[in-house]
Amino acid sequence: MINTRRFISNASVSVAQTVISSLILFVLYRYLIDHLGSEQLGLWSVVLASTSIARLSEMGLTGSVVKFVARYYALKDNKQAAEIVQTAAISIAFIMGFLCLAAYPLLDNLLVLAIPSASMPQAMSILPWAVFSLWLSSIAGVFQSGLDGCQRMDIRNILMIFGNIFFLVAAVWAVPSFGLVGLAIGQTLQVILLMLASWLVLRRQLKTLPWLPIFWHKEKFKEMFSYAVNFQINSIAIMLFDPLTKLLMSRYGGLSSAAYYEMASQLVLKLRALIIAANQALVPAVAELYEISPDKVRDVYLKAYRLLFFVVIPFYVAILITLPAVSMLWIGYSEAQFIIYGTVLIVGWGLNTLNGPAYFINLGTGDLKWNSISHVLTAILNVLLGLLLGSMYGGIGVAISSMAALVVGSGFVIYTLHKRYKISFKTIVPHEHYMLLIVIFGYILISIWINSMYLLNQSIVISGVINVSVYLVSIGAVMWVHPYRTLLLQRFKKRV
Image 1 (cartoon, helix red, strand yellow):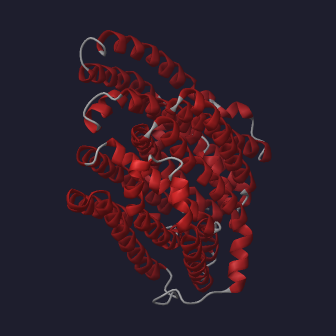
Image 2: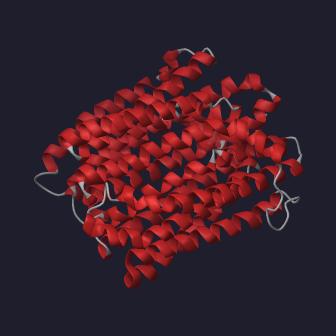
Image 3: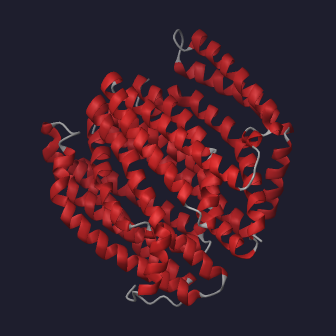
């Protein structure tokens, strides 16, 4: 059975890390907008997106570390778990290092497709730091995945919190004097800190680890590689999704559009991570359960999905109604592009979030082909639709294309899991949540009326306060009497 106390601890600290990291990001981006401007922020976003191509050389090994460490850790075989970590770290360090050096001269040709020629010198000045930090972060990712496999996501997330605080302090110190280069150096120092700290903490969990990862095992590499093939397909597809979306956004919408899309994306994704972080704890937990009682995986999925549905819909509607106020606080004024991009992203990522339990169940059981097909489908649709709609409608066309592709791919994962476990498709909208949905749709109509009465004629603050107040009262009443509220409280008491 799943260790409920450990599972809830991991999920709780993951959520806390997401909240704190989101607040840090909010402060950082507001600082960068004030001191560098939207075009500089957009340039930073596009350069980071272009360098992520080098992650192809990870070969999916980082993801496979969670699966195999969790397996050997459950079997109390720390020696083999330590061999997995060392083999993955050494493999990624050498292969990715070689690819980064080989691909570096080609990156300027990629950047020139999306960045104006006047901004290219500055882009090239931060490119070396971006590539170096990417290489280090991949190695650090192995150690962090090792902690996840040991079911110590709580420790990993605590390290992430301190790393983000360090990055914020480094940025505030370096940006006034060195601009974007100072930001890049600060990120590199953050990654070095996380890599060292993650390794030291992991050694306390797997005491058979040496002081440095120096042992490479051919059989362990083969074992991980056969599992990691699907992860590699996922990596390629993910590379085609987010980085290419940002490159298309820069090309068809300009650097300012890329900046506002980046901010809206970070807002939605950071808040989405509050929910996804809890679901990620399913991976090591299901990996262990699958080794012991595979027949119980179906029940775990149904419980996780129904509980997720209860939280997701009200959660994303709450984000939607706060977008104008967030724009005022984050950017300093009501920015139409930010609000439009945010709305599109909320719809797309909101529907995608419901895919979480199915996606992570597949990761835990090792049945990755459906996730891989989903990523490939999403990537292909994103590129094709992005080129078409981007050329026709600019940045908004790119945003709509990426979210349409995301929703189609996400739906495929849910569809295949329901077919595999013989789950009725009627459960996609659980009957116990019908009243919740009725109230949500009714509130959306009320919100439109409130905005038409106040937003244009009075102030965003008045409209926002009224909107949030009405929403909290209406949806709060339904959620309070819902039986799932009692279930959440019971699980929280178990944690305490």
